[in-house]
Image (tube, rainbow, N blue to C red; front, side):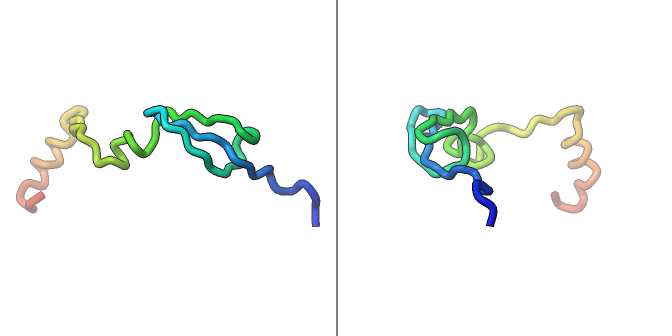
Length: 73
């Protein structure tokens, strides 16, 4: 079997957007490095359900609703 085939799997610190830090195993960086997230599951609308409204760019949503209004959408 080949030696040094797999990357080093070590513990890193992950810093969330709210400042909390936790440790996890990863192949990213080096032992003890800190990975700062720009977007994390605690604040991103894709995971939280979001309170943002759907933007109707160019009236596409309105056109869809009008076209299929009789089908009960």
